[in-house]
Image 1: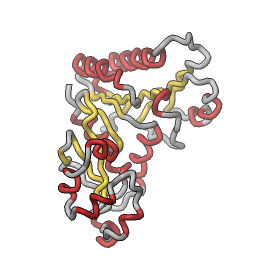
Image 2: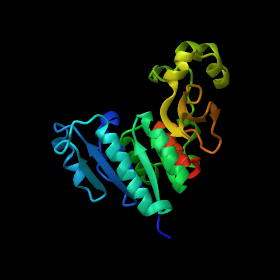
Image 3: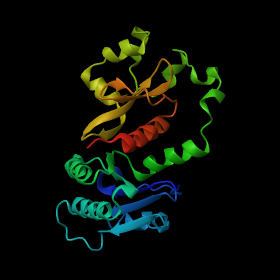
Image 4: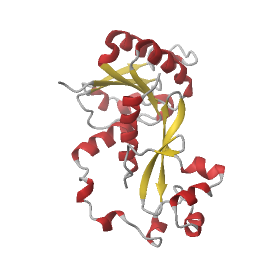
Length: 244
C-alpha cells in the first residue's frame, strides 16, 4: 500500500518563507506569498514539483486577512475533494485558523492540524529522521549523558541555571519554575484538539528534549538530544490522534 499523502498549506505571513531543498514525494505544498519582495528569493525552490505557489503579491486586492481566506478556501476545496485519502496540515502561528480546522475535522473526519513552524522546520526533521538518525541502542551512553559542569554550555534560553544547581531532579526543577519561565522554556508549540497544548522542554539533567501534552510527559514519544526529532514525532502523533 502506498504511503498516505500529506497536503501542507503554508501561511508565510507569520511563520516565514524558508523552504527545504528537498520535499518528499508524499507531500504536496500550497505556499502562499503576498510580499512581492520575497517572491524572487523563494521562486527557485518553489519550482519543485511538490510545491504549488499561490502568488497573492501580483493579484492582491490589499484586503485584510486575504491570505487567511484564500488558504481556508483552498483547504476546504482540497478536503471536499480528497476527504480521508489525505492528511492536512496548516503551518501558521495564527490561532484564527483553529475554529475552521475544528469545523472541517468535525464535518469530514479528516486528519487536520495546525503546526507553529516554517515549512523547512516541518520537513527537515522528517527527512533527517529517516536518513541520518542512528538507532537509539547504537548511541553510546556517554554520548547522551551530561554532567552539571558541561550543561552550562547549553543555551540558557532553554533552561534555568539557578534552578538546575538547586535541584537534582527534573520534576522538582519544573515545579519550581515561575510562570514566565514555564512559558519561555516550552519550545516548538503545536496545536492539538483546538489548543496550544503540545510542546517540548529541555531536561538539563540528561541533555535531552522531553515531549509534553497539557503539562504531562508523553510516554508514547521518547526524549531525544535533537529537539527537531522530538517535535517531528509529536507532529506525526497529532496527525494520527487529532480529535474532532
